[in-house]
Amino acid sequence: MDLSLVESGGRFELEAIEKASIDELRALQWERLRAVVRHAFDNCLPYRRKCEDAGIHPDDLHSFDDLAKFPFTVKQDFREHYPFGMFSVPLDRIARFHASSGTTGKPAVVGYTAADLETWAGLVARSLRAAGAHHGDRVHNAYNYGLFTGGMGSHDGAQALGCAVIPVSGGQTERQVQLLVDLKPNIIMVTPSYLLNIADEFDRQGLSHSDIALRVAMVGAEPWTEAMRAEINRRLNLQAVDYY
Image 1 (cartoon, rainbow, N blue to C red):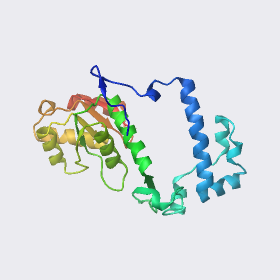
Image 2 (image 1 turned 60 degrees about the vertical axis):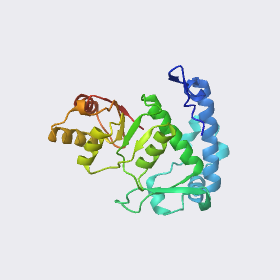
Image 3 (image 1 turned 90 degrees about the horizontal axis):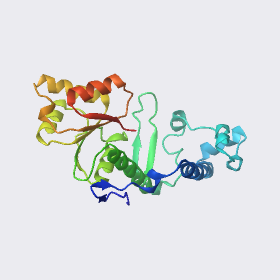
Image 4 (image 1 turned 90 degrees about the vertical axis):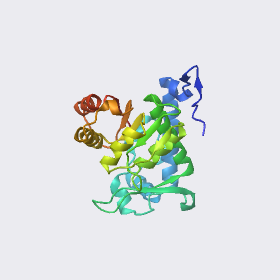
Protein backbone atom coordinates (compact mmCIF):
# COMPACT_ATOMS: atom_id res chain seq x y z
CA MET A 1 0.00 0.00 0.00
CA ASP A 2 1.60 3.25 -1.15
CA LEU A 3 0.12 5.96 1.02
CA SER A 4 3.03 8.36 0.45
CA LEU A 5 3.56 8.53 4.18
CA VAL A 6 7.28 9.26 4.10
CA GLU A 7 8.10 12.54 5.77
CA SER A 8 10.07 15.10 3.79
CA GLY A 9 11.73 17.90 5.68
CA GLY A 10 9.49 17.27 8.67
CA ARG A 11 6.32 17.35 6.53
CA PHE A 12 4.36 14.67 4.75
CA GLU A 13 4.31 14.76 0.98
CA LEU A 14 0.80 15.14 -0.37
CA GLU A 15 -0.48 12.56 -2.82
CA ALA A 16 -1.24 13.63 -6.38
CA ILE A 17 -5.01 13.45 -5.85
CA GLU A 18 -4.71 15.80 -2.86
CA LYS A 19 -3.21 18.45 -5.16
CA ALA A 20 -5.47 17.79 -8.16
CA SER A 21 -7.24 20.61 -9.97
CA ILE A 22 -11.04 20.77 -10.19
CA ASP A 23 -10.82 19.56 -13.81
CA GLU A 24 -8.68 16.60 -12.78
CA LEU A 25 -11.08 15.74 -9.97
CA ARG A 26 -14.10 15.93 -12.26
CA ALA A 27 -12.37 13.71 -14.85
CA LEU A 28 -11.61 11.09 -12.20
CA GLN A 29 -15.15 11.27 -10.79
CA TRP A 30 -16.60 10.82 -14.28
CA GLU A 31 -14.39 7.82 -14.99
CA ARG A 32 -15.29 6.16 -11.69
CA LEU A 33 -18.99 6.99 -11.91
CA ARG A 34 -19.31 5.29 -15.29
CA ALA A 35 -17.36 2.27 -14.01
CA VAL A 36 -19.52 1.92 -10.88
CA VAL A 37 -22.82 2.18 -12.76
CA ARG A 38 -21.66 -0.35 -15.35
CA HIS A 39 -20.32 -2.75 -12.72
CA ALA A 40 -23.54 -2.59 -10.67
CA PHE A 41 -25.69 -3.12 -13.76
CA ASP A 42 -23.63 -6.07 -15.00
CA ASN A 43 -23.07 -7.81 -11.66
CA CYS A 44 -25.96 -6.98 -9.29
CA LEU A 45 -29.26 -8.47 -10.50
CA PRO A 46 -31.54 -6.39 -8.20
CA TYR A 47 -29.91 -3.20 -9.45
CA ARG A 48 -30.19 -4.29 -13.08
CA ARG A 49 -33.91 -4.91 -12.54
CA LYS A 50 -34.36 -1.44 -11.00
CA CYS A 51 -32.67 0.08 -14.06
CA GLU A 52 -34.83 -1.94 -16.44
CA ASP A 53 -37.98 -0.89 -14.55
CA ALA A 54 -36.84 2.73 -14.92
CA GLY A 55 -36.10 2.22 -18.63
CA ILE A 56 -32.47 3.26 -18.17
CA HIS A 57 -29.16 1.65 -19.21
CA PRO A 58 -25.50 2.48 -18.47
CA ASP A 59 -25.13 3.52 -22.10
CA ASP A 60 -27.56 6.36 -21.32
CA LEU A 61 -25.09 7.96 -18.93
CA HIS A 62 -23.61 10.80 -21.00
CA SER A 63 -23.07 13.48 -18.34
CA PHE A 64 -23.26 14.01 -14.59
CA ASP A 65 -26.78 15.37 -15.04
CA ASP A 66 -27.89 11.97 -16.36
CA LEU A 67 -27.21 10.41 -12.96
CA ALA A 68 -30.60 11.73 -11.80
CA LYS A 69 -32.26 9.30 -14.22
CA PHE A 70 -30.73 6.24 -12.54
CA PRO A 71 -32.26 4.45 -9.54
CA PHE A 72 -30.40 4.67 -6.25
CA THR A 73 -29.73 1.81 -3.89
CA VAL A 74 -31.46 2.21 -0.51
CA LYS A 75 -31.21 0.30 2.74
CA GLN A 76 -34.47 -1.54 2.06
CA ASP A 77 -32.80 -3.14 -0.97
CA PHE A 78 -30.34 -4.84 1.37
CA ARG A 79 -33.16 -6.10 3.58
CA GLU A 80 -35.17 -7.44 0.66
CA HIS A 81 -32.16 -9.26 -0.80
CA TYR A 82 -30.61 -10.38 2.51
CA PRO A 83 -27.94 -11.58 2.97
CA PHE A 84 -25.90 -11.61 -0.26
CA GLY A 85 -28.30 -10.53 -3.00
CA MET A 86 -26.82 -7.04 -3.37
CA PHE A 87 -23.24 -8.26 -3.71
CA SER A 88 -21.62 -7.56 -7.07
CA VAL A 89 -18.56 -9.81 -6.76
CA PRO A 90 -18.39 -13.59 -6.15
CA LEU A 91 -18.44 -14.59 -2.48
CA ASP A 92 -14.98 -16.13 -2.73
CA ARG A 93 -13.59 -12.62 -3.29
CA ILE A 94 -14.99 -11.32 0.00
CA ALA A 95 -12.30 -10.75 2.63
CA ARG A 96 -14.52 -9.43 5.45
CA PHE A 97 -18.17 -8.98 6.30
CA HIS A 98 -19.77 -6.12 8.21
CA ALA A 99 -23.43 -5.49 8.99
CA SER A 100 -25.85 -3.05 10.56
CA SER A 101 -27.56 -3.85 13.85
CA GLY A 102 -30.80 -5.02 12.24
CA THR A 103 -32.88 -3.38 14.96
CA THR A 104 -35.46 -2.18 12.41
CA GLY A 105 -35.47 -5.35 10.33
CA LYS A 106 -32.93 -7.65 8.78
CA PRO A 107 -29.38 -6.27 9.01
CA ALA A 108 -27.75 -4.77 5.96
CA VAL A 109 -24.83 -7.08 5.19
CA VAL A 110 -21.81 -5.56 3.45
CA GLY A 111 -18.92 -7.52 1.96
CA TYR A 112 -15.46 -6.04 1.47
CA THR A 113 -12.84 -7.35 -0.93
CA ALA A 114 -9.14 -7.09 -0.08
CA ALA A 115 -8.94 -4.06 -2.38
CA ASP A 116 -11.88 -2.45 -0.57
CA LEU A 117 -10.14 -2.88 2.78
CA GLU A 118 -6.94 -1.37 1.40
CA THR A 119 -8.87 1.62 0.03
CA TRP A 120 -10.67 2.04 3.36
CA ALA A 121 -7.44 1.95 5.36
CA GLY A 122 -5.82 4.41 2.97
CA LEU A 123 -8.67 6.90 3.31
CA VAL A 124 -8.63 6.66 7.10
CA ALA A 125 -4.85 7.14 7.09
CA ARG A 126 -5.22 10.26 4.93
CA SER A 127 -7.96 11.58 7.24
CA LEU A 128 -5.72 11.10 10.26
CA ARG A 129 -2.80 12.73 8.51
CA ALA A 130 -4.96 15.70 7.48
CA ALA A 131 -5.92 16.12 11.16
CA GLY A 132 -2.26 16.29 12.17
CA ALA A 133 -1.54 12.69 13.14
CA HIS A 134 1.77 11.20 12.09
CA HIS A 135 3.95 8.13 12.31
CA GLY A 136 4.67 7.22 15.91
CA ASP A 137 1.53 8.74 17.41
CA ARG A 138 -0.57 6.62 19.75
CA VAL A 139 -4.23 6.29 18.73
CA HIS A 140 -6.92 5.43 21.27
CA ASN A 141 -9.67 3.81 19.19
CA ALA A 142 -12.98 3.96 21.04
CA TYR A 143 -15.13 3.07 18.04
CA ASN A 144 -16.87 -0.29 18.42
CA TYR A 145 -15.13 -3.32 17.01
CA GLY A 146 -17.19 -6.11 15.50
CA LEU A 147 -19.86 -6.12 12.80
CA PHE A 148 -20.20 -2.33 12.77
CA THR A 149 -17.79 -0.72 10.33
CA GLY A 150 -16.23 1.87 12.65
CA GLY A 151 -13.65 0.19 14.83
CA MET A 152 -11.78 -2.05 12.44
CA GLY A 153 -11.56 0.44 9.59
CA SER A 154 -10.25 3.11 11.93
CA HIS A 155 -7.78 0.62 13.38
CA ASP A 156 -6.45 -0.40 9.96
CA GLY A 157 -6.06 3.22 8.84
CA ALA A 158 -4.20 4.30 11.96
CA GLN A 159 -1.91 1.31 11.61
CA ALA A 160 -1.32 2.09 7.93
CA LEU A 161 -0.19 5.59 8.93
CA GLY A 162 2.37 4.05 11.27
CA CYS A 163 0.57 4.83 14.51
CA ALA A 164 0.42 2.55 17.54
CA VAL A 165 -3.22 1.58 18.05
CA ILE A 166 -4.88 1.10 21.43
CA PRO A 167 -7.93 -1.01 20.42
CA VAL A 168 -10.20 -0.17 23.34
CA SER A 169 -13.57 -0.27 21.54
CA GLY A 170 -16.59 1.24 23.30
CA GLY A 171 -17.82 0.97 26.88
CA GLN A 172 -16.03 0.49 30.22
CA THR A 173 -15.62 4.24 30.59
CA GLU A 174 -13.57 4.07 33.79
CA ARG A 175 -11.07 1.87 31.98
CA GLN A 176 -11.07 4.25 29.00
CA VAL A 177 -10.03 7.08 31.31
CA GLN A 178 -7.35 4.97 32.97
CA LEU A 179 -5.82 4.12 29.60
CA LEU A 180 -5.96 7.74 28.46
CA VAL A 181 -4.08 8.77 31.61
CA ASP A 182 -1.60 5.89 31.74
CA LEU A 183 -0.80 5.23 28.05
CA LYS A 184 -0.92 8.90 27.02
CA PRO A 185 -2.33 8.50 23.49
CA ASN A 186 -2.16 11.59 21.28
CA ILE A 187 -5.25 10.89 19.16
CA ILE A 188 -8.68 9.55 20.09
CA MET A 189 -11.17 8.18 17.55
CA VAL A 190 -14.67 8.24 19.06
CA THR A 191 -18.31 9.32 18.73
CA PRO A 192 -19.12 12.80 20.09
CA SER A 193 -21.66 11.61 22.66
CA TYR A 194 -19.27 9.04 24.08
CA LEU A 195 -16.40 11.53 24.22
CA LEU A 196 -18.62 13.74 26.39
CA ASN A 197 -19.26 10.69 28.61
CA ILE A 198 -15.49 10.29 28.93
CA ALA A 199 -15.20 13.96 29.87
CA ASP A 200 -17.87 13.40 32.55
CA GLU A 201 -15.85 10.49 33.93
CA PHE A 202 -12.77 12.71 34.08
CA ASP A 203 -14.76 15.15 36.21
CA ARG A 204 -16.09 12.36 38.42
CA GLN A 205 -12.55 11.14 39.12
CA GLY A 206 -11.26 14.65 39.76
CA LEU A 207 -8.97 14.53 36.73
CA SER A 208 -8.33 17.19 34.11
CA HIS A 209 -6.88 17.58 30.64
CA SER A 210 -3.46 18.10 32.22
CA ASP A 211 -3.47 14.38 33.08
CA ILE A 212 -3.62 13.28 29.44
CA ALA A 213 -1.73 13.89 26.19
CA LEU A 214 -4.61 14.07 23.69
CA ARG A 215 -4.32 16.77 21.07
CA VAL A 216 -6.85 15.61 18.41
CA ALA A 217 -10.21 13.83 18.55
CA MET A 218 -11.41 12.19 15.31
CA VAL A 219 -15.14 12.50 15.93
CA GLY A 220 -17.82 10.88 13.79
CA ALA A 221 -20.42 8.11 13.34
CA GLU A 222 -23.30 10.28 14.59
CA PRO A 223 -24.55 13.86 14.23
CA TRP A 224 -23.08 16.54 16.45
CA THR A 225 -23.13 20.32 16.75
CA GLU A 226 -20.63 23.16 16.90
CA ALA A 227 -21.69 23.64 20.53
CA MET A 228 -20.67 20.03 21.28
CA ARG A 229 -17.34 20.60 19.51
CA ALA A 230 -16.68 23.71 21.60
CA GLU A 231 -17.55 21.86 24.81
CA ILE A 232 -15.27 18.92 23.93
CA ASN A 233 -12.39 21.22 23.02
CA ARG A 234 -12.77 23.22 26.23
CA ARG A 235 -13.17 20.30 28.62
CA LEU A 236 -10.40 18.11 27.19
CA ASN A 237 -8.11 20.82 25.75
CA LEU A 238 -7.86 19.27 22.30
CA GLN A 239 -9.04 19.84 18.75
CA ALA A 240 -12.14 17.84 17.82
CA VAL A 241 -12.42 17.39 14.04
CA ASP A 242 -15.04 15.87 11.77
CA TYR A 243 -14.16 12.32 10.78
CA TYR A 244 -16.19 11.02 7.87
